Every structure is written in C-alpha cells, then in structure tokens.
Image (cartoon, rainbow, N blue to C red):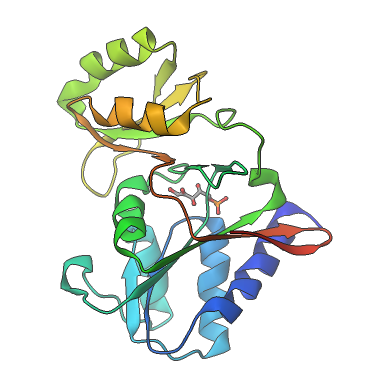
Length: 218
Ligand code: 5RP
C-alpha cells in the first residue's frame, strides 16, 4: 500500500476509539481530511467539533459538521490529529501544515489525544523533518540569530501566513536528542508563538498504519 492508502486505513481505524456524545477536535492535513470523510460516512453521533485551522473548518462545514469556538467548550474533547514525525517515546514534530498553534491548544485541553499516522512518520530520532515554529513577524531577525546559536538552520516559509497572521520558520539540523529540553529552550524566546515540538504534551495513543495492519503505541 502507498502512504495515502495507509492514511485512509488509519483514518477508518480510529473511528472505533470515538465514543458518542463528545466533542471531537480535528487536526489539520491530508490524514485528517481522510478522517473527516470517514467520520462523516460513519454517521457517528457527536456533539460537534472544534477545529485546528481555517482549512479544516471549511472541510467540516462542507460536511455539515457543527464547529464550535474553542473558548466556548466545557465538554470533553477527543482530539484526533496526525504528525510529521513521531519517536517511540511518543514525542512529535508537527506543523508541516502550519496549523501548530491551534493544534497545540486543542491537544492541551483535550481529554484524550489520539495521533494517527502512516508508518513513514515513525522514527528513532526526531529531526529529519525540519521543525516548524510560528513567530511574530517583527521577531524574525532575533529568532534567526537565536536558532543559529543553537546550531540550527532557520528557513523562512515563503508565502505562508498562519491563521493568527504570523509567519513560520522551518528549522533544519537542530539537535533534538532531548526534545523536552529543546521545546523548553525555544519556548523561552520572546516572539516565538508556538514550537512544533510536542514533547511536553504528548498524545495518549498513537495508531500506526502499516502494511501489516494497525499498530498501537500507548
Ligand atoms: C499540520 C500537521 C499535520 O498533522 C502534519 O503535517 C501531517 O500532515 P499529513 O496528514 O498531510 O501527512 O501537523 O500542521
């Protein structure tokens, strides 16, 4: 199976983990687009959705799924999202689609966070995928300097503005042997809105789509 077929399989498999009458948090990306379609076809009963991006909101609304403002939610949220890389400690890089800020907020407030990936995303060590960070545009020069001091190579993501009106820098070659430490260091720089490392807040369950079926890490 190719990666898209594997994504479709795991998008179907995660339906078994969704109870009735909850709010679902929907991530962003191609895996989640497959999941939204599978979810719609399943006719599962939920209270509604919260969305991690403008892009996902449009898809949800096209399927007639009710989308709530994140601030208004008091019911438990089951958050379903994918990732760009995950290691065996369940630490992740996210933000390939630039939706990392709302993704991190929903992950943090969710009761359960389930990450669904195809097997290409599972790695022994994070960092082959460049680490996205969302930054306030006026902090650009300062953040570039700080990243270079850390040994990374920052690259401005051209032509991309986040839902919050900020910019994305993709960091290459950063040493991510200790992802929690690096997440804390980057979080300490004023001007960085969100770091695409999800090492402090990790998923509760990972479903991995492989050619030998769906595997789990929890
Ligand atoms: C978006 C993300 C996505 O989860 C990540 O980029 C994976 O995308 P895809 O499902 O298209 O492979 O973090 O910000």
